[in-house]
Length: 352
Image (tube, rainbow, N blue to C red; front, side, top):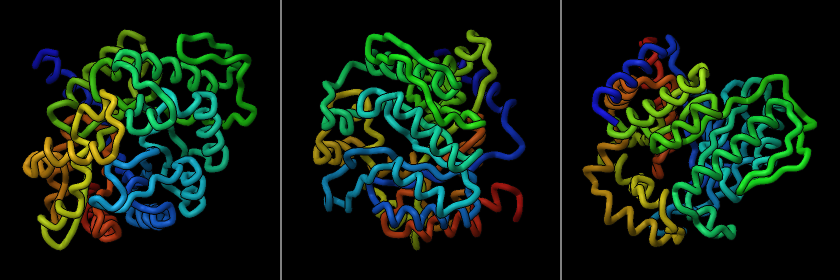
């Protein structure tokens, strides 16, 4: 992608930004117990976040206890409970893999059920997944091209089911015979596709209601460009552009970063492409491949709320319609949410 196209795509995205930006928080099943995360969901809504989502992992990014506790409860069970302890926020996974571990018919049924129980609040964040979650469930980890092909087939089935169709589908990877949903909500839950590159972004433009990508100024413009091109080719109205980052607040900047270092592994690109599924190996790769300098640059780690406001405003300039921040504070998760509620979100919304 040329520099010119990158600039044009970011400007295109900025022109589409709403007056009221959506701010969400992602809660980490890998790090916290499901009951702890229910408390965090309640606190996030009280803090004023618009959206609460959660990771969907079978395995964590580290071995239990090295360097942090590990949990990985089922997100769809948890989301049903999260709807009970909250009343306003949008709810969904960020993201559910639709390449193997979940049958697409079941994914459609799950998100439709969420929407039936909590009207106007459910969404589906979907993606191609990682070997760490799919290989233990019996998958021979495929090439990136096959990952994308599987994702597009699954997304086609899910979208048609949520549209109320009876679906008979004969694909290379997935098959359905007269599948339908018997609990079809009045509102179709929006689908956002996770994309780290232009090809996945183009699938989002064909089939999803928005694209979900990393809040990384070096990679987001290419994803936005792929999404824009695809929407234009398909004659579809573009949807949300969701940028996701990581955040932690603590007494000092160093403490904020030190309490989150187990998450370095999420910045290793090979973990999303290759058959690397052992948590201990994944954590070693994060430690060796991601320097403290790079980790700090990719995250919002500070004791000062003004630093968080400044960095998030910079991310908005990439053209996001929604910004989601994963609470990766291992030592101060409630304090991070509280700081955002008291100082960060009001400043972003011009209330202070």
